[in-house]
Length: 325
Image (cartoon, rainbow, N blue to C red):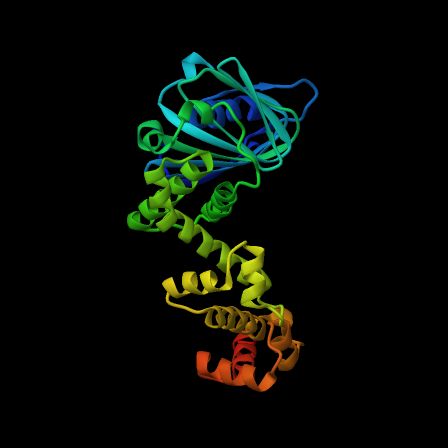
C-alpha cells in the first residue's frame, strides 16, 4: 500500500491560504493521499476536514466534505487495495463497473482501487474510508464480486462495531507501539471481512479475535458515557449493546476487571478531576460524589481513600494550595 510519511495527521482546507485552497487540497488530499481527482460543483463552498491514520496493512481516511465529485482516473491507479466506504451522514452514489451503488445513513460499499470509479457526493457528508491491501483481505471474503456490487446495510453488526472501533483511531495519542498497531489492524480486518461477507474460516477467526475486542471497546465506551447514572447496571449496558450480561462480564474479565470495578474506577476518576479542578472549587464534596454517580457518601469516602490514599477533602485542600502558589 502507498503510505503517507507519518502514521497520523489531520488536514483541512482551512490550513491553506484562501487563494491556494482549492488547488492545494486537490494536490495534497486528493491526488497524493486519496488518489482521486476532486471535481467541484458550481456555487458550492469547498470544504474538507480529514483525519488520516496508517497501520500495518490498513489505512483510514475519515472526515467531512462538501458536495463534489471524486474521480479515480486510470492515471490515479497506483495500488491494488480494497476500500470500504461508510457514509455516516449525507449521501453519495458510487459509480463503478457500469453500476451505481447509493449509500448514506451509515450504509457502506466496497470498491477496488484498480477500478476507474466516481463518487458523486450530493451534500455535505461525513464518511470513513477503510483501506486494505487486496491480496491480504480478498481470500477471506466469500464472494468478492458479489460483495462489490451491493450496499452493506447500516444495521450490520460487524459494520457498526467497525465504525465504533475506528473512532478511537482519530486520537493522535493512540497506538504508540508497533505491536499494538498490528493487533488493532488485525481486529479491523476481521470486522471489515465480517461486514463484507466472510468465508467460514475467516468468520471463525474473527469470532475469537476482532469481534470480542470490538465489543469490549464498545462496552467500555458505553460505561464511560453513562457512569454518572446512579442506576447504571450491567443489564442496561448489555441490552444497549445487544449481548447478554454474562458476556459483558466475560469480556471485562478478559481485560482483568469486572463491571463494578470498571464503573467505580470511572466514577472515582471523575470525582478526583472535580475535586482538583478550579472550575468546581465551589462544589461541596457530597455534590461532587453524587454528580460522579455515587449514591452513598460514606461508600464514596472509603473508596476514594483506598484509591488515592487521602480523603476527598484533603485532596481538594491540597489542590487549592497548589493553585494559589
